[in-house]
Length: 105
Image (cartoon, rainbow, N blue to C red; front, side):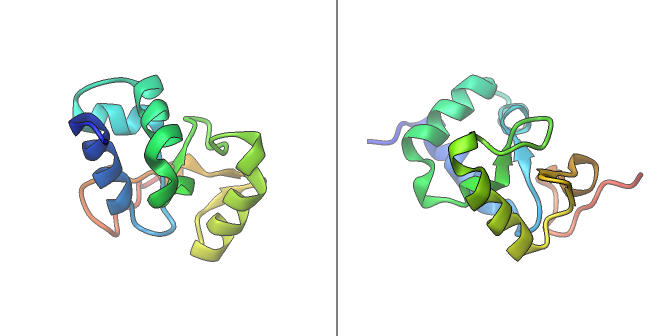
């Protein structure tokens, strides 16, 4: 059974627009509770049913190396801004305020 914190994490991940991402820490900060490790725990336990590839490390790398190639395919399919094999966090970070938000340089 999913606990209330996990439900809030998963609901937020479902709202991340295609082509954008949030880091584990971004999610915890947005929710105002937990931290990157707690978000990671939720994602590893229950994240398979949400767009898990939109949750990345703060440096723009995939959640784990085992899924890196799958993440790259999803990112490319969605047009996520990349820098090599990682997400360009300056361009792709979503702050939760609107579906078309892009941080300006």
